[in-house]
Amino acid sequence: MLNVEKARLDKVYSNTSIIPIIQALGCGIGDDFDITKLRYGKIIIMADADVDGSHIRILLLTFFFRHMRPLIENGHIYLAQPPLFKVHKGKNVRYAFSDEEKNMYVKELGEVGVNAERYKGLGEMDPEQLWDTTMNPETRTLLQVSINDAIACDEAFSVLMGDMVEPRRDFIRENAKYVENLDI
Image (cartoon, rainbow, N blue to C red; front, top):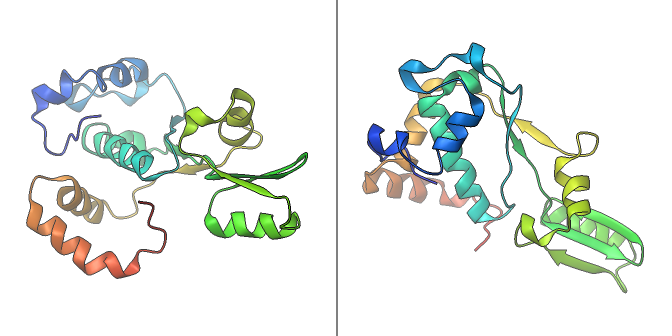
């Protein structure tokens, strides 16, 4: 996926990862954007629950924010929340979305004989697991993306996704102390 924050428009419009998204949505991009031509009510970003998946989500959100912002402003962009862990003992299965939830399920199932598997990606789930945890409208968790402060979002995308290294380094130094779940 292209980092559109650093790319020229001709690179954005010709990117092989972005073209299918633009075509599928049907509403154009930039000056040609027309939300009335949108083919879907929900655009769901589904990526792995690890840091690589987070990076892909951010790249896609940067694209939508910079080139199709009305999709966010009108509530069409969602983030799927796949589980990080499968915790099971015999036929008792729980899906955990955090380390804390995993630990709770391990205790709940009795600790002895409990297996906790960390998913490295969506591809590690069998189709039924992926459906039950991430795709089934009855059981999935979606987070709707919104813009509470457009100016702050604009600044954050510029600093964190732009080509200026020093502001990004300063941001990381100032905010590293707040990191709670670092997945390396």
